[in-house]
Image 1 (cartoon, rainbow, N blue to C red):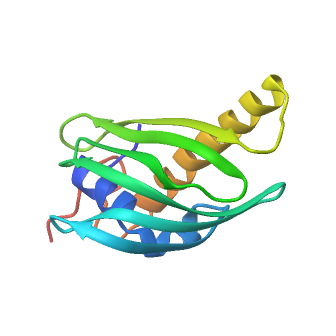
Image 2: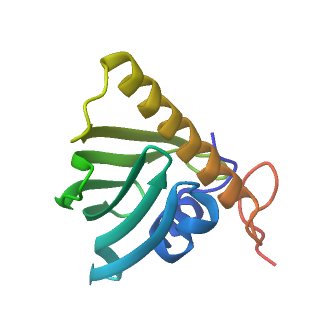
Length: 147
């Protein structure tokens, strides 16, 4: 649960330029195209230790309820990627689900791959939660300050 309403969370998710500040492996996120005021294609430069890559994701937005992405241009290490954030809840607290599936060109045992995916998901959710809840205007315990 993130102690903020869906629009506040989706605003952080849609602010790609700020990703290097809270998504630990992202070095650069550059919006290449927009549709209806939100990014539809974003180029990422990633440095996750063993995996260093530059790739482009395509985005599909469903208001402040969900965003899904797919690999639009593969990089040198990542060959397939799909994922999304799903937001559920009304008012001050939002259940946030992060989905991710990644295939690498680098051979990796199944157990190690699953562990890496779990680490990425846990880190992404924790980083998002910390970023959203530390923003000005978000009241501890949920909601936004209307002052």
